[in-house]
Image 1 (cartoon, rainbow, N blue to C red):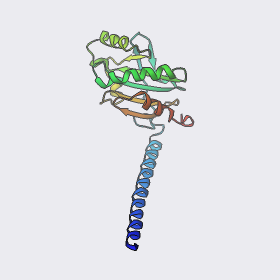
Image 2 (tube, one colour):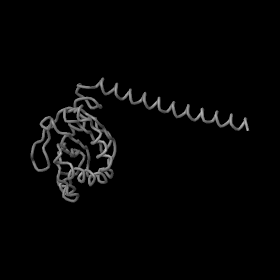
Image 3 (cartoon, rainbow, N blue to C red):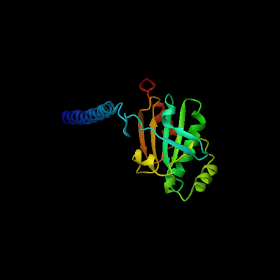
Amino acid sequence: MRKLLAIVVIAGLAIWGVIDHGRQEKSSAMNMKSEEFLENEGKIGINKGNTAPDFELESLSGEKFKLSDYRGKKVIVNFWATWCPPCRMEMPHMQKYYEQFQNKDVVIFAVNLTHTEKNRESVARFVEQYSLTFPVLMDEEGAVSDLYGVMVYPTTYIIGSNGMIREKIFGAVDYDTLKKLMAGIDENLN
């Protein structure tokens, strides 16, 4: 009986050690993220904590949009293309999010990688097919996608109301994830 009790105690201590070590690693990782964020704060760049590089693009409808004109609002900048399967899967989620939150100081800029498309008409057909109502911006020369270092499609940046990059997402994002990420932005830091 004593041997069994000793084995249970030793196993319990081993499990507690593993759990505690995992918590310490997670805490260290969170501190590293905070340190990285503070190190980047205020610098213009494309990492979390950086001030997002400003850009101006024309929308599919011909209207000009400049990122810095939207300070004071949370901005989702989504780089996408019509030929990209994950982009196609993601767009209904973006639209659903926009419909629910557009009146709550949230803006979505869907930056189309127009330089990779067959033509503008294919973008217009896509927008109509998916009933997109947020601004679809045309990156005709690829200058903005280059400025943001876009290598994966889609890529999404979440920018706080102060112009600071709060999140950077590679690949498709769904409605629930987007809602969670946007809700996680601390308004005091924006």
